[in-house]
Image (cartoon, rainbow, N blue to C red; front, side, top):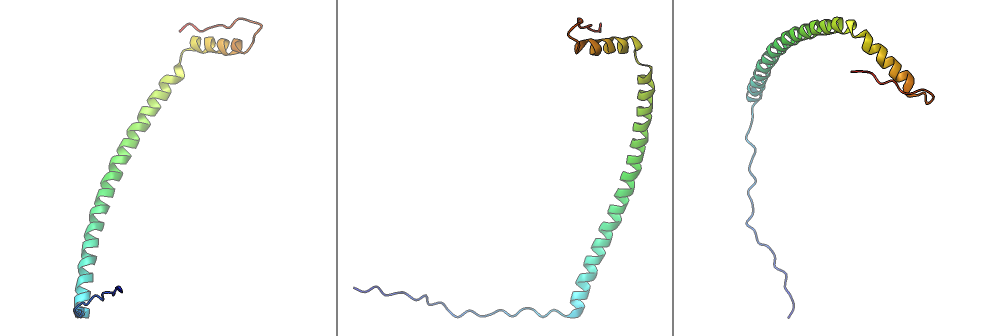
Length: 103
């Protein structure tokens, strides 16, 4: 019994015609998009200006903290510095015992 191939019989499809768009409709759509983009641009500029003002305030606060800390750290502990210097000088020398700092 030979095998017969089946042919798909489909109803002929009707092609839908694209709606006619006039130049005026295209222009109106583009104008709406431009207006929306301009509104977004205004909000982004405002938020950028606000962020810039906040950032400059924070930067000035951080700079003042940095100057305060650097002025305090310059005083330091001279005794500790001397002890650490002795420690590092004696650590690499096997002929003398290592001098450990008193913390």
